[in-house]
Image (cartoon, rainbow, N blue to C red; front, side, top):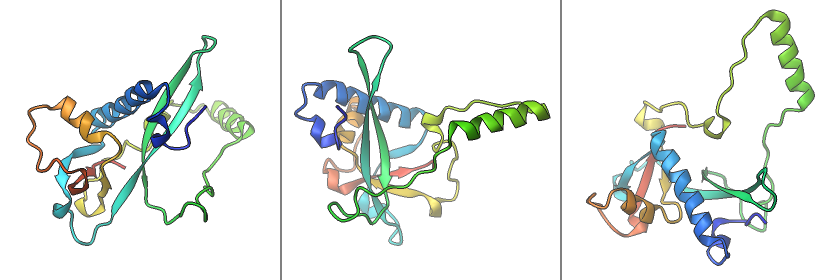
Length: 171
């Protein structure tokens, strides 16, 4: 069963597996250059809003019966939605299989080449060169633990999670 939020995984019998899935997500953010090193909250420009992190959890079936893959994805929550008011409302673009078939047919008829992209990183591919456009994010769950495992000798400006933020370098 997919947990409604990452906090629900702490008391799950699969807590260590969810932690590994989350750390794998942080590894991916590191390898794609999406997040900066930790910086102090006081160094964020005054005109910038620090967004909340959200961890989206997903359980996927595998080809092996009764075996599942756990995925955790770090998202920024810049919405003004409030739990118990409009928290369950969300909108996302969806393409029907007929639309995709139509695009393939048009490409084949026109002699076009179709390329495949990794949609798990589809929105992490453009570097934000303009520092005024960059987004700041409070530390996601267990991020400080993961960071200290990766760089045990890195001198952190603070060990207080509330004083640290991440700068998103890619959108």
